[in-house]
Length: 81
Image 1 (spheres, rainbow, N blue to C red):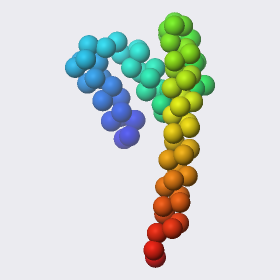
Image 2: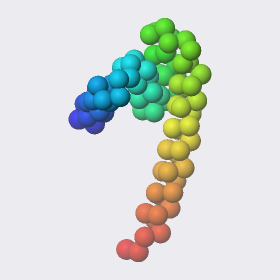
Image 3: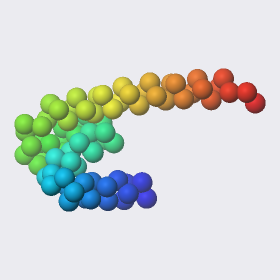
Protein backbone atom coordinates (compact mmCIF):
# COMPACT_ATOMS: atom_id res chain seq x y z
CA UNK A 1 0.00 0.00 0.00
CA UNK A 2 2.86 2.37 0.77
CA UNK A 3 4.50 1.82 -2.61
CA UNK A 4 1.19 2.20 -4.43
CA UNK A 5 0.62 5.54 -2.68
CA UNK A 6 4.17 6.59 -3.48
CA UNK A 7 3.77 5.75 -7.17
CA UNK A 8 0.46 7.63 -7.23
CA UNK A 9 2.20 10.71 -5.80
CA UNK A 10 4.92 10.44 -8.45
CA UNK A 11 2.31 10.09 -11.19
CA UNK A 12 0.36 13.13 -9.96
CA UNK A 13 3.60 15.10 -9.63
CA UNK A 14 4.48 14.41 -13.26
CA UNK A 15 1.11 15.80 -14.29
CA UNK A 16 1.20 18.90 -12.08
CA UNK A 17 4.80 20.00 -12.61
CA UNK A 18 5.23 18.59 -16.13
CA UNK A 19 8.34 16.69 -15.11
CA UNK A 20 9.58 13.56 -16.82
CA UNK A 21 8.41 10.43 -15.03
CA UNK A 22 11.76 8.66 -15.44
CA UNK A 23 13.65 11.33 -13.55
CA UNK A 24 11.10 11.47 -10.74
CA UNK A 25 11.10 7.68 -10.47
CA UNK A 26 14.88 7.72 -10.29
CA UNK A 27 14.80 10.21 -7.43
CA UNK A 28 12.14 8.17 -5.70
CA UNK A 29 14.17 5.00 -6.15
CA UNK A 30 17.25 6.70 -4.72
CA UNK A 31 15.35 7.63 -1.57
CA UNK A 32 13.59 4.31 -1.09
CA UNK A 33 16.05 1.77 -2.46
CA UNK A 34 19.33 3.51 -1.78
CA UNK A 35 22.28 4.33 -4.00
CA UNK A 36 22.88 0.87 -5.48
CA UNK A 37 19.39 0.48 -6.92
CA UNK A 38 19.35 4.10 -8.07
CA UNK A 39 22.57 3.61 -10.01
CA UNK A 40 21.20 0.44 -11.60
CA UNK A 41 17.99 2.19 -12.63
CA UNK A 42 19.89 5.17 -14.06
CA UNK A 43 22.07 2.87 -16.15
CA UNK A 44 19.12 0.75 -17.30
CA UNK A 45 17.16 3.83 -18.43
CA UNK A 46 20.17 5.50 -20.08
CA UNK A 47 20.04 8.42 -17.66
CA UNK A 48 23.83 8.50 -17.45
CA UNK A 49 23.90 12.20 -16.58
CA UNK A 50 21.91 11.42 -13.42
CA UNK A 51 24.02 8.56 -12.06
CA UNK A 52 26.05 10.69 -9.65
CA UNK A 53 23.09 12.75 -8.34
CA UNK A 54 21.09 9.55 -7.81
CA UNK A 55 23.90 7.97 -5.82
CA UNK A 56 24.38 11.13 -3.76
CA UNK A 57 20.65 11.34 -3.03
CA UNK A 58 20.65 7.69 -1.98
CA UNK A 59 23.59 8.16 0.38
CA UNK A 60 22.07 11.32 1.81
CA UNK A 61 18.80 9.46 2.40
CA UNK A 62 20.68 6.68 4.20
CA UNK A 63 22.52 9.19 6.40
CA UNK A 64 19.38 11.13 7.29
CA UNK A 65 17.42 7.93 7.92
CA UNK A 66 20.14 6.53 10.17
CA UNK A 67 20.34 9.62 12.35
CA UNK A 68 16.56 9.99 12.43
CA UNK A 69 16.27 6.38 13.57
CA UNK A 70 18.89 6.88 16.27
CA UNK A 71 17.13 10.02 17.48
CA UNK A 72 13.78 8.26 17.56
CA UNK A 73 15.32 5.39 19.53
CA UNK A 74 16.69 7.86 22.06
CA UNK A 75 13.31 9.56 22.38
CA UNK A 76 11.44 6.28 22.83
CA UNK A 77 13.83 4.79 25.38
CA UNK A 78 13.93 7.99 27.45
CA UNK A 79 10.14 8.38 27.47
CA UNK A 80 8.47 7.96 30.87
CA UNK A 81 6.68 4.66 31.26
